[in-house]
Image 1 (spheres, rainbow, N blue to C red):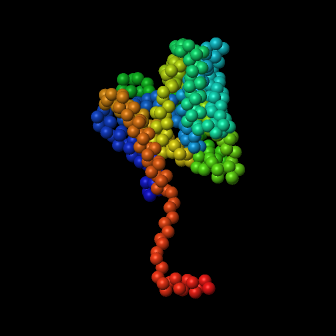
Image 2 (image 1 turned 30 degrees about the vertical axis):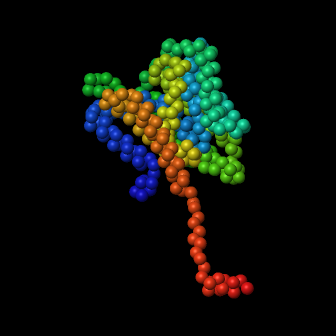
Image 3 (image 1 turned 60 degrees about the horizontal axis):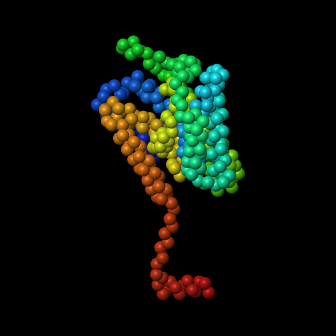
Length: 345
């Protein structure tokens, strides 16, 4: 029990339960299977992005360009699929290739030139997004390949409402959960995962024990790119359109969810389960505000408060954990001085 109380995830889970009960007391439609399944499906896009952000934050970095990466991967993949055909497997593989390439560029620039990650990724965000707008001329894609629609409609579990309307667990939700399981296994049970924690905790110590820091940084940002690309395709599956400006701007929401789940902006800390709870807490707040008819602008206020409080709490914990040595210097009596001198002589 004491171990549970020490874990950040315990408190996030408690807040989720309290919020859920409050919202349900106001609107009973909130805590229903239908709404929960819809909530998981609609937030799979943010959740998949959050997996990549978690890896980056644990490694001690930060990425602001992942929304631009997701948009480019999504846009180019759909254009190619419209021209040459293909399948959902081809669409995901092509998007992942683009995402890995763009992410690896971020990682290489950060390590090779020692540019702060936030500066590098802000620059690449503007570069990637700007090039997309120039070449696409801001054109929306309203027509997607037919297999996008058929794939998005797949359910692995189908239930029915009292009115006979179907609902259930979407294939999109399954993709999100499968990626979380993969990410969790990677972080907990592999040397690669332990190395990510190591470079986030102390990069100099990590170098001394033989961890290839450059490879790890490139891997982490390439992994972020892959998650962004998958999230881009999921976004296309959810809305059945592709807009060059529909994803850029959601970066803070994703980062806030990961930090709320216990990851530290200083690096070396974070879990997949905590990230999931962070995503769900923000999703529940947003959905609850809609059901309670609270203006959406208050959600942005909540996200801002989450970031400020989380960063402040992390800084406070870091200061508290610093070891300080206090030396108690007392005036010696003449007898003590003589005995010390005698002992020395």
